[in-house]
Image 1 (cartoon, helix red, strand yellow):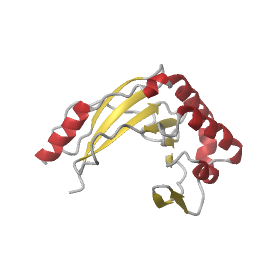
Image 2 (tube, one colour):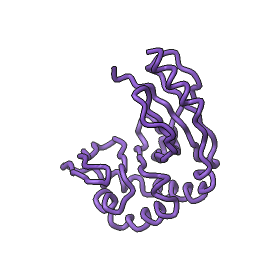
Image 3 (cartoon, one colour):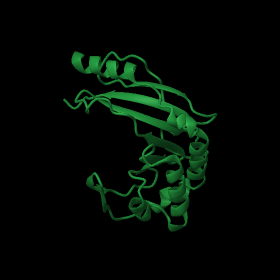
Length: 190
């Protein structure tokens, strides 16, 4: 347990906020506004009765369709994924935003409904855009590292952990409504 905490704290202290999200903040905010405007449609579209197998460059995985009231993660911003999980009238707009921002920067995103427990203001949905980040080291068996941008979500900063069941997180302002966070989750699958 001490080794896991030490490795998690070390990588957390090493992590820096990337410049690229700040350089593209205006376009990212426009994309978030677009997703929030169409969030109910995107969530409703993915409330299906059947699960689908999706193949990506990284392999194949099954996406179970969400129940009403659950978040939905767009696990890939590729055209093939979007054709399956995006209403046809929104595909071109989402594709344009992903191209402008760069699929290398935002490989996936999650939309959560108004009633989700992590949604801060329940009058509209919340978003989490996962960011790619430079991987200086191979994956560690001691922690999970994540960079992300969020809108209307309850997230808590925490600069220290006493047990491996806590999460390290720091964030900064990307724009008036957007926050950029770095999270380290100690691996507890022992």
